[in-house]
Image (tube, rainbow, N blue to C red):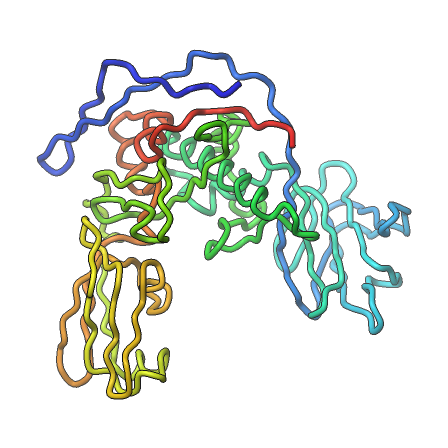
Length: 384
């Protein structure tokens, strides 16, 4: 049974830059959390590479696809795994269709150039080999929280991040459920920042352990709990960024206006834009054709001497490699444009800097989550 995030009649008053926002609701849990299901995530660390270094901090058992033990790797030694002509993988003196590397005791595995918890699976692909870290979700989060947030931030912000990141990982796992090799990658472009044990700390252990097994749901379904660095004053409705509405990703006033990292500007030349979109020829104008209610560019038209190109939603940010889509454009002459903007990221869901400021003003992690994700419940992970 999910634990509903309930509303009290008491609101939390938060002054921001001379104004007063009413943060409603003040929330609490009325049910004791039942035990939750343990989940192993398959996180792709190296994908389709010609070789990958692997090893372990303790003696490691090497197994083949059937689970048969092939031998041991000594501690603190790295070995190259690489594809074999005709199929399979070579690792040290062994050849097999795939390899499992399992540290003994409380050892870590070494993949590429970092240490990770859990074990590693090395498999051949059409383009080389892929190394996948099989790790318990809570241990995965020990690293993710330190990658996504500064571990020195207030503990309530870190706990909010832990629940959002756990929920996001399970949503992506569900989305990838038919993928034969992995559930997640380790980069922020599509997944979450996962650097292994190097980004763990006592603060991340505490945030994860104190929220263990808790996820956000809407109508008993795991939500797409996206988050971003900062919105620049107001988050967005999801349909204005990605096109499809979701009831829990609604725009709210934000608390990150005082953050220098949320203010940015970029000079971009017509030549640079033409290199990205050669079909338009020499760029003459950048025309914002449609804005969101909060000033983000929903549609941008690039006008060149050979044609035009229209960018929509998140494509505006990613194609031009900008921090956000909330910006103004000035033609500075000589084929240059000055873009001045606010925000960092897609502007949907929880603002991390907003969570930081809310936590400084004594909002707890449940209040933070209820503010950024509308109408959600707090639920235990269920076995799937």
